[in-house]
Image 1 (tube, one colour):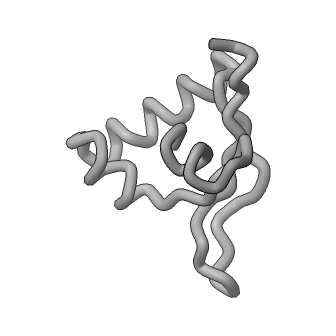
Image 2: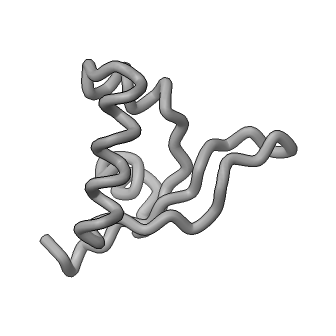
Length: 67
């Protein structure tokens, strides 16, 4: 996710669970648990849910100040 943000020059990115699964080597449920944990730690923030209209993915903001 950080790589996607850096590529776009912003603090947010659109990502899909399958992309995260492939990049991390985790299974779907594990990926969901990690995302939830990152949100609870306020390292990432969910800005928008997945939309079937644009199919970009779920929009997340990386809280770089938390690192």
